[in-house]
Image (cartoon, rainbow, N blue to C red; front, side, top):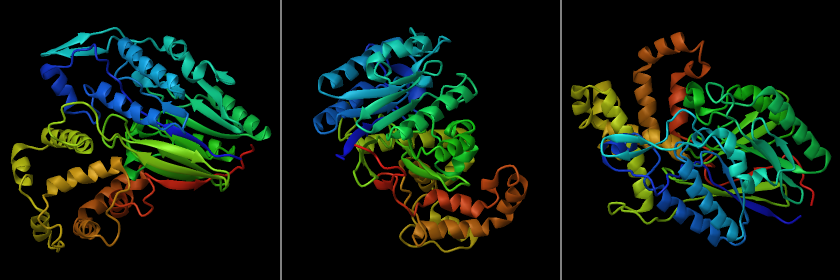
Length: 439
């Protein structure tokens, strides 16, 4: 069988060029946001140009959050860009997500100190609006949830699952939607087809801390992961959390499903993927970034700009939380001083780093992926020593919180697993697929 490739792009959050984006109103929103907004037309245009330049890869998958916050005009501008890609020979399959509709008057543009309401996109109109990008070519549909199955190539099908749920608290897959999905998986297997899925919300928590964040994964994620894996679905592509991560889950029956989550297209880590299904029953995954875009980046490269935007967000949130005296101390508090205070030695290679800067980096690394501080690195050893000194305090947390949240039953392992990833596969990897693909 010949190989088959596609691009995976997610969380484009397009904000139309017709909208105003100036003044304090915009800055107050922008500095607390990981993604860029005013910059989205320039970033997306540059990114789509890179996709179009690859003449060998025809299919593009986009699992939701197409626009910023449900603006109708943003959908118009984004769809125009999709049609341009289509004219260049691309086939695009997408699903929509919660940023793509708004029925409560929330969409705005920004001018000075004012938030000015703009027209929103009703959810009910999205399927027809994007009928040329997956919905119209579906070989099976679950209309209530706006999910569908598409035949991407000979022997390869896509299960595109919308997970809006009740559009409020439930962010998951309804029972009747799940029944339909399981029927489609079985049908594909019976017909000798390989089928994989995409959905907006991650199926699996990609880091221990994500177990504690409600919308970092699907509602009832473990139940759904078990059902999918035991039905023979072994691969799902997701977005939403703006993170690069490849995460496995194995059921009690020994069946494994892998969640390949991709970072935000318009913010740190600014990533997209090219996935190739090979004849040897493997999926080769490679990640790329947008090299440059036409915007005033203050003398920074594109990667530096995205990183600066992320770090600014974390620093701003820390400034909001910390009292002024504590902030003043932390601004000059090095790892060497921290070690002296708690009676442990810090390696010379990192001793002059500010503790605040390290904290920002560790948070950023969770989203960027391939967390570098594995066992044996100076940072890992320093963190292990710090946790040992803090154990009288963390042990209390373990006793009080561990019963309700098992991930908190061992604080040392919880923290150390977040700063280092031995597998280093969040960007590039090769996965073994469970089922042969017929061609």
